View 1 (cartoon, rainbow, N blue to C red):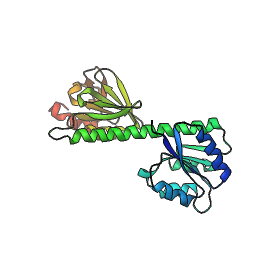
View 2 (tube, rainbow, N blue to C red; view 1 turned 90 degrees about the horizontal axis):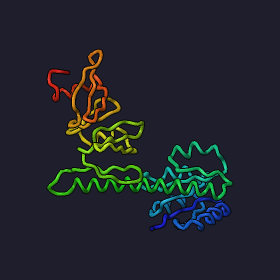
View 3 (cartoon, rainbow, N blue to C red; view 1 turned 30 degrees about the horizontal axis):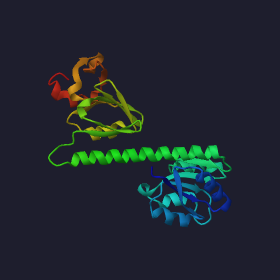
View 4 (tube, one colour; view 1 turned 30 degrees about the vertical axis):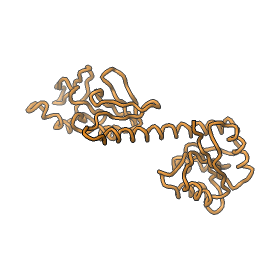
Length: 255
């Protein structure tokens, strides 16, 4: 397995030594370098090929937050901030740091931060793989994109659109309800999933649900002129009044 490349950035030699000693005991990582100031760190990061940075917040000349600001999001490794001042935590997470180590920290706390960085990298790589695979499937000559690559539970799952009954919103996540009764939770908003599915086979029926048109069994009239969408699985979903027009062609003159 390829080791994760780690950069240590701290203006204090003893702090760098402590991190170095902890990292030497981790067989899954290698120390790619050390920097004693922020400007050197920016130059090193821009060279690429880094996975994780343990980055001191307070440094002369260019502090850790400024280092992050200088690096574009697509070039940015997983960032673990290190500082002796806990009031920097809010700013650290504001720039999407993976974790925040407060000096002095022990090896157990260090390992916790390292594991969070590993999980972040694993998720990001799986998302990138899924995107690339879906693009390749869509680009194959002479065929339309027939499968959707989705990242769920640490896996990349390939689904045909007709395997999806409906999609349910769950805050910034979405749950795919499949024809075999299984469910997959995705780290995507419902709107993002809706765009990927397209509007030929899927339709939004309310702010929290997108359904496959072929899975709609009937529309039932509810109170006050509202309707329920009844799926072949028996699931009943409310149909928003402002979205009724999207189903008119399937029930002309009825809505």
